Length: 207
Image (cartoon, rainbow, N blue to C red):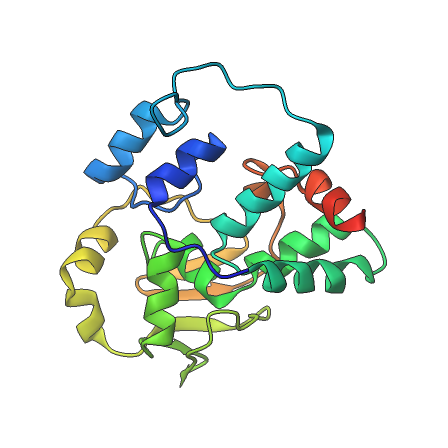
């Protein structure tokens, strides 16, 4: 299954969850929040039908996939890696996802969305430990330092505007000084679990 590239507001409204696909504070994000609980389409105002347990598991899995901009194969591989670990599978699944380079850029406030963070990485605008890394799925380790490859990228209008926003809440497992970010602890699962029920995702893949 390919990575989703369709209308992002429509996708979030279908799931009934803000998936972090739009820049916070933008007009598009404001429109989304007003209609978040109204499914897309001409019959959107009708009451949502009760869905089966399997359908709910599928919905949670899709939400997680869309949040992190993953293909079905990528997410399933993360699950396979997490399930063989000793301990809490949900913890390891969240850890692997949160440790992705594109996610760390987003979580640290260097980019307005994970999609924008992915573009920064693939266009070679990001360094890890002073070396350019152009792989969005690169898994960061504790102590890794993330920076822009050039100060010029910070002058791009949408990046410059977003970096001026001081309201970004940064997880405690990240340390940010100016435009430099360091992974100081293993990522926690709370950020994901506020939006997605990881237990249902695991049940879906365990069927």
